[in-house]
Image 1 (tube, rainbow, N blue to C red):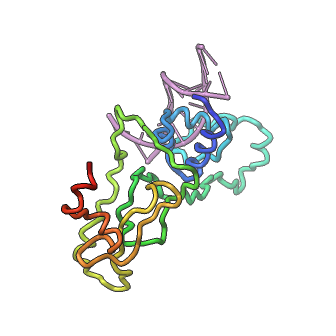
Image 2 (tube, rainbow, N blue to C red):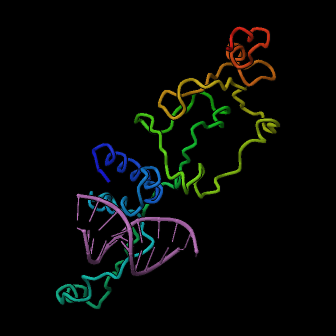
Image 3 (tube, protein in one colour):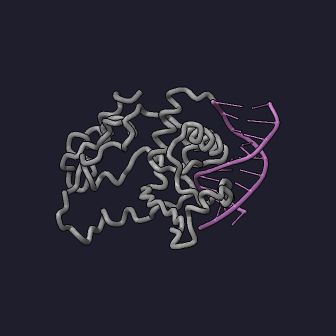
Length: 200
DNA sequence: CCCTGATTCGC
DNA sequence: GCGAATCAGG
């Protein structure tokens, strides 16, 4: 693995984002071992490790034992409060369709870097990571049992490239019964009559 | 078994 | 310096 400033920066970013080592590895197309190893060498802030290898460097040192004193020796309850974000896994989903409900609020993912096309491990990793994700989508947009404060339907015509900072949806008021505004509906629904000379 | 991160150690 | 192997907990 060639650890360029680029890749190192990316590693740091993802690491700071709280992604698992394996996830980072998948994104960088390297193994989690590489990630962990590098992270260590970079002295990146360790994450709540599920294990703690037998702690050497303890027990001995009579000095500390003396200092510790058998009286009210504060137990080393190292319970470092780790508010690690439960972000866990962010899907590489290119187009967040859910944005239809939330127009122009959060157009882009927190990735201020250039768009990256991650080939991933196609041979073993399909588009979706192992997490079942949340099947709590859809079904609301049709019925919408709670029309309160509804920001109204918005044109979901994509502007820009998904995944890039500037990406967003049109957001204009769509035509009745259409997902797009008048402007983009024209483009979206090509009239058959006009298409004859438009399409080769 | 799957996952996780940490450490070890040959390269 | 690197990362696979290994360890170890959930």
